[in-house]
Length: 159
Image (cartoon, rainbow, N blue to C red; front, side, top):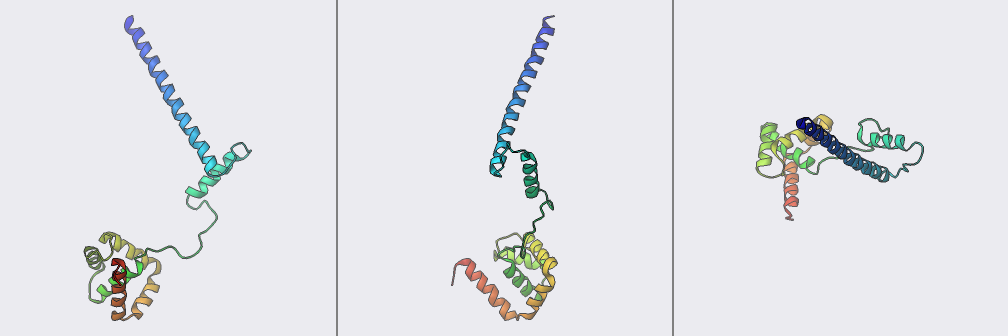
């Protein structure tokens, strides 16, 4: 019967330690909830505090929940124009887009992997392809080369 008593004690110890762990976790969650109310400047004692916190968090983290729309053009990358210029120059020489992106990455003209450059090019073309084509087709090869040289000099710090 001693074995049964020992088993009962180990189960009791397990349950007590589990309860302590749950209490500690609950205490941590309470601290984080208090921090959320403070961070969003919501009085936790007001009647609709929980609803206000839920709506605030949903507006911040749930896509499409917030009714406010961002104004203006989506932000681009600082290398969008040079990337498009370099690819256009390579395209005029008969290069494929992947080949041009590999060359740009290998030369460290833009310090991004070729796959990133190619993905960014696709985003730009899919989003604003007609605008890019209009601009790039209107520029001479000499002008494109001058733009690329200007970018590379500015990037390297040379004037």
